[in-house]
Image (cartoon, rainbow over all chains, first blue to last red; front, top):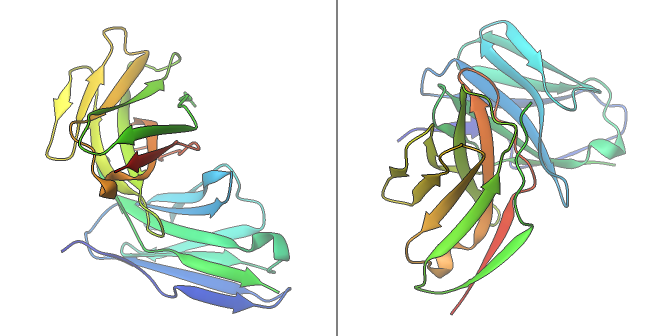
Length: 110
Length: 109
């Protein structure tokens, strides 16, 4: 059974903290993605990676960075968390056809 | 990026066919049309994709206009479990999936 696993379902962090959201896939996919989802705004692409150590900015990269040191793992980093980064974060992986999504991490920044 | 336009919401009766429209007038020749859906409290899941010809799979059918400027996702017999947000996405090979706001489908018994 194919799987994209996000490290936490729920996370509460303080303003100014450095936050790491981890995503692991077991399908040997080249492409991995990070999205955030907010009510009324749909899914917005933050970053994607098409290979190890390769990354491209999505629509809303400000305030975020990413790391992909190994093919199976794609990390989203909030360098200094702010309250406007409270959101649902979704990770996905794909070859070029079907993408598979994790269950999401609901991050609250207080 | 080529954009898609979908109705914000649609409603259907259970066990009836549903036709979900998508307009993509600026589609390029290398864009594939993908459909995903997101059930409540879950991540999106793949439904179907196509380039020029109509496509069928166990979940749905995809009808693509001859000029490729629009497409329709067809659920042949809606069930309550099909209530979800449906996203129509254009994707060039190897590029990212850019979701819009999708169509929220309500299925009533």
